[in-house]
View 1 (tube, rainbow over the protein chains, first blue to last red):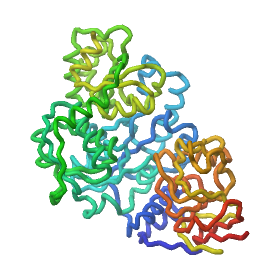
View 2 (view 1 turned 135 degrees about the vertical axis):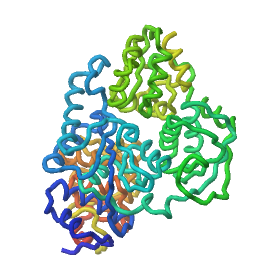
View 3 (view 1 turned 90 degrees about the horizontal axis):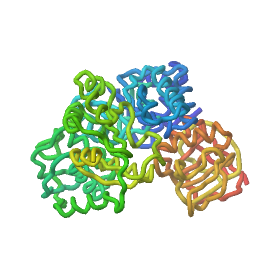
View 4 (view 1 turned 180 degrees about the vertical axis):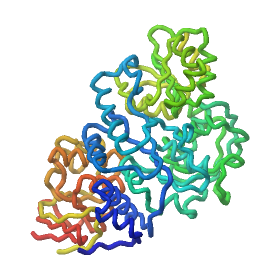
Length: 399
Length: 130
């Protein structure tokens, strides 16, 4: 049998491909080497961390679940591997209106991942809860917002993986060396001068929308941002990846990667920001759903939300989801934030998010601080949307 | 006629070609239960890919498309083989997890719907048998 390979494999990698380390590993290695061939990689490189997407049963369906179950028969992850959000809170799903049937199927998905040794975090912000690579580290992450954060804010290196390719990287501990793993593909291509004033996660999401829509896949070099919190950067990452497919950006004075500054310069003015906001504000949106935590809320955000909701009551006919990772929820319980939030009639939902939960038909209008959440609420759930800062969202919820 | 391409996923089969000059998005563009192309305005709209040597330029769309190919396989509605000009990662991963013989780097415009085609993916060769 003739197999033409540009890729050079080590003996261990060849053994995996030949099936000497089990069926799941073999299939995983077939995926990794095929991608390497397509992109002209010369070799595979070890990865130290994996983030897997394609976890919600809502997206995966029965066939996706079957694939996972098949891989779980003898597949075992070789590196630290964490999971994207599921379609529901794995413990409190019932009170959030999730059906028994969905819950059963969702749990089967989680069980299949757990059987492979995946840490079933179920969050889009793995970097906030213990899957935190360092600068220059090669990793294989899916979840576009986390990919963007890892590449840009942390300076780790990953391509935008899909669900099966991320799992394949986890089962082999390898990825093919191409794309953003290589220095030459990480340099900025367009400069954006930001002349607008930015305040809060909603503004940073809108900036991501403006730059994403303009730059598409070109790597932006962003100037003029004097200060950004981790929460604002995670909002920017989510949005710029959603609206533009950006997997890496440079932000002067804030992100660690080195690059020459491109001569091609565009400006982002207050006007552009206002227009972006208008685009996400649907006329006649009747708000009955308020969601914060896309990407998953940090403990700092939750502390502030608890403060804002303290002594208030969510209005009748409105539902509030604050979505976060389970370890963050546990911390919120310990600190009394959970109690305050739930007493106000809002839900602190872990493991899930409003983009992947089965919510279609349950609500009409979403108010959120997240530009990314607006995109999925419209596209997948046919909700109308309004984007506001966190304070305004909670005011709407309680009035 | 014989084309020397590149193996994406192993296997060797003979079957009837279904050819399109349009790219295919399996997620949203192909019914995972029937194999019928449902994308509005697609050249193959209403046609089933099941059991065919499916010939198209390249894939497009969401990474969930890989799982759609897998669903087709499980439903017995998958293409017999795939021949592309350039296989995109979504289709490549889908072919591998579903074990659909796949070859790319083939001049797809030279193959006609209805022709009897041998796909020898192991050797990266596609032959029109007529």
